Structure formats: C-alpha cells, structure tokens
Length: 137
Image (cartoon, rainbow, N blue to C red; front, side, top):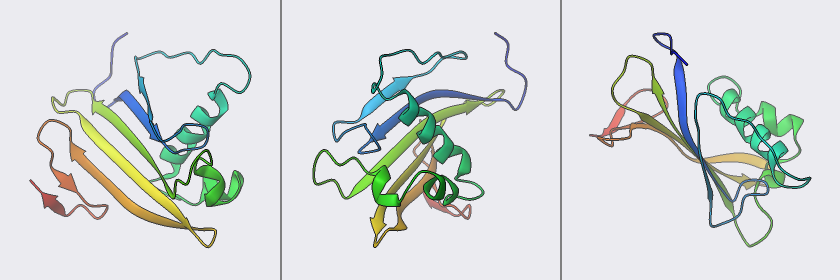
C-alpha cells in the first residue's frame, strides 16, 4: 500500500487507565490497514472512542467527553486510578523521524484536567508544548 506525501501513518497506540484498558496499559501495533475483531466486551468500541478523543484533540478536546459521559467515565474504574493516558506514535510520509503524541488527563469535579500534553520526536526526544515551544531537546 503506497503512502502519499504528507499522509500520516499511525505506528502504535498505547492506552493506560482509559475506559476498559487498565493500569498495565495496552499497546497496539498498527499497520496501514487494521481490523478490529473480538467478542462482545473485548474493547472494540472503547478503541474507537479513544481514537475519537485523539481526533478531537487539536480542535475540541471536550467534544468526546460531552458525547461519551463525564471525564471520570473515561478513566478505568478497576482500581484507584486518578488519570488516564494515550500515546500514539506516527510518521508523516516523506519524514524520517517518527513522532509521539501523549495526552494524560484526570477528572477534577467532573471537569477535564489535562495533566500532560506533548508532542516529541520519538528518536531524539524533543518535547514540544501545545503552543509549539520546544521544552527539551
């Protein structure tokens, strides 16, 4: 499958304390084409909800929480977890360096509290804040 210049390719997703994915975290290696198959209550819908959260991050991070319950509903309730995290590693066609985006959040009186949001070069570990400021290089 060919990739057009500028097109994003998701390499992996990791969820920790998010929806039905627990404290040990779950890492999904991704290919250009992925199919979700599994029995009921295996986490397929939660996987899609997590993708919706990532898709909303640049524009309206609150939208998936409004549509899918309170912020606290998104945090795994199998333990005393107070926050959830998503990491996605991706590469842009034509670029040599993969990037990692991390979002860690908690509920604060049913409101969203973003604890960490960062984008960094996976191989060089350049931290970039949401406003583009380089925090660490």
